[in-house]
Image 1 (cartoon, one colour):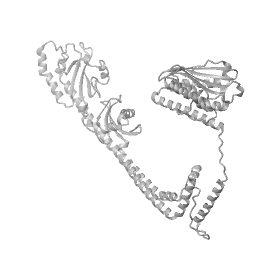
Image 2 (cartoon, one colour; image 1 turned 45 degrees about the vertical axis):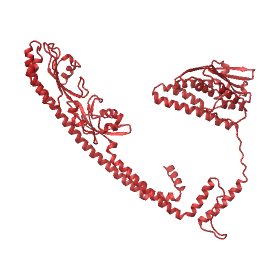
Image 3 (tube, helix red, strand yellow; image 1 turned 60 degrees about the vertical axis):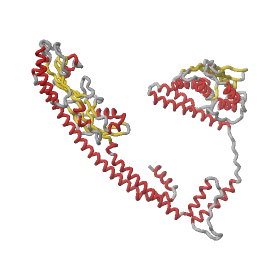
Image 4 (cartoon, one colour; image 1 turned 30 degrees about the horizontal axis):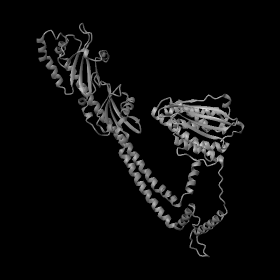
Length: 612
């Protein structure tokens, strides 16, 4: 806290006088007004929330009572249908034995049952499923039990008391509510009981709810066991606003539904949106009628007030700033000339003196005194600058270390970006393996205890790089380096082989293809250590090869520059020549479509081999 206070005190101390006056007016006038306005809006938001919850609770209770009433109507219709004992007895008898009986049944019992169905506008279909081999299926109300699925549903129906509702019918019930009821249990001629099914279309049963297309609350009926089974109006504005997140909203709400806590609103968050839900449990249907509202939509009015208050506050602050600016300009007009001269000096114009307009014997006021002393200071600065000689000394070690940092940064940023893209696209645990390889590369690149490393360490780093690139590019890169043990102990400049292998990976491999990289070591005339890095990739076209070879034959003491494709072979070559002389460095040979071979020449006397 003390640090923060000191920091703000320093900022205030260094601010312009006009800024200090602006802050003072803002704190005493604008800020209190904004705070009061925001507190008022927060109070209105709280009251709006309470009113919305009360209205939503009333609405969902009304829907609950309405749906329960319609369920009772369906149950009454089923009871009326079962009072037609003659109809029930006939469909359990031998309907094929006497055609005259079938005609009379059609004219009497069947006609009465049809009238019962037609008298209930909510019922779209009433069907009986009977285990009777002598059943005649010539009317849509009478079926053999074999047409009913699932076949063993009667056991579940029996366990539920002989009757049960389903929000979605068991057969072709995408938009149909069904009521199932046991009619007769097994008998001598029946292996399975008879079941009556009454269907009601969602568009009729939930008519009032499905006609609502707007309002603060969005009504939906959810199955008590399956959140994906829902009934709602897809044309409701809430559905359009929720978009692809609608299913997630249903899942989150369904997780918190509790028949024992029906008066408690539910609050869920999906993405950056918050939703409230009020619900009632419909026990016969084993479903919930739920009203869902978006917090952002409920608070749209107060949120617009925030914008209004912010706009007013911005205008007030702008007016304060203009008044303060005008006042300070009038009071400190001559001080502005001092500040203007200082700005010119800061840009390098050292002859920007202040015209005080004073005579020889005039002292002036405090501002004039500042101006006079400031002019004297400029004269002194110009006098001192004529005595300074600007010398620039370019140190080779500083140049090389700067280049090393550029190369490492170039590689690391590309590697990290590739991992990030792969993680977003694949989302696979195999990325952990890539991170291990990348970690090895990072540790090797950033740990510089010495400018030289053993050849084995450089080789291990290259192997980690090949493993990582195989993961990142999805290619098939093969590295072969069968070197004698005594050579692996030799010290070489760190990161002198890595850029060459990178060139082979990025430029030699065909798109989606694979290459083999082979590293060999030999000694020439007991004076130089030769490290050859050969690949069997696409090779280098003759024009580019000639350009590269010309660059490698150039002046070894010329400055190091970046090629048009970044820091490349010429860069590494010049680094080696700066430290070990013109006889060392790189050489490249290539044949298009066959191979590319880069040779590193280093002093053979290991004791004389220094780092970068």
